[in-house]
Length: 326
Image 1 (cartoon, rainbow, N blue to C red):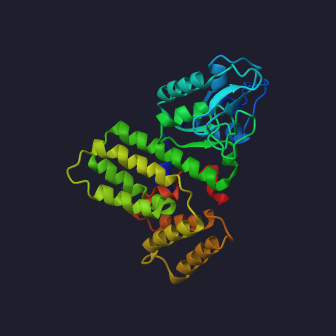
Image 2: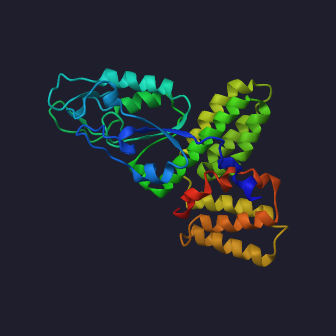
Image 3: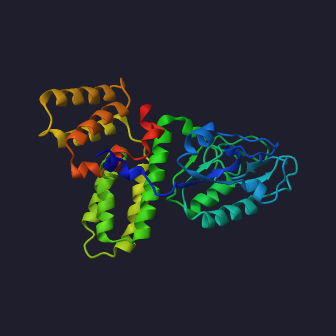
């Protein structure tokens, strides 16, 4: 049973992640330094192949170099030099973002350097012409162009990955993206779409219950529609739903649903123990891994073929221990 439960998170090859090169320890920053993330280089490198890129170096800015900043309309800022204002690298950064989005067509996610005028995803400072910052931040030029070309790709900033809920959510999305790439590789059919959605039923219910029902209706009304035409719309909606972090309330709801598959096979005392742990999780006394571990134990003793296929039970490698802190 354990092998079946873990199959959803295991890949024949490690998923590839794009990453800002400075986060991998490359000395490519404006001052010749780096911003190595030990989470990436020590904790995640066993499970992912990283594809580093530094857009500022790639477009010809040196090391060390003059810093750049975002100026003008926060929605459409310009990337200019902080010393020489005639240095405008907006177009080269945007073009490089589009180029890399085309070239990195086999990655399953991207981790960007926060606050960077080239790579930041949100809250990047944008300045008025008089030098005063806007209250609202913007997005780095390279990151904006890249994400526009790959809108369904899971993306996150390094700083936000320090939050255990956001970290677990991002990596869940990365493995979902990788699983979908396998569906595309094998060929999109009605059966493939239905089976994929069935495997993600409880994961979707945890992340976005409303979208879970909407996606179920979408496939349920597939009829004679061309699955190849439906698939991109389905997957975009799926990735949007998974981006919503699950809460204790939605996790608890899913745990209760899964527990229902054991009602005819385990003793009253075992049911009481599971219920106690689910309640303790809901109250914030124990992490999610505690009731999940007990549920998996009982499903090893009393296998259920439908539950065995559910990605929710192991959406990422167990050794990452991502659910120990949520």
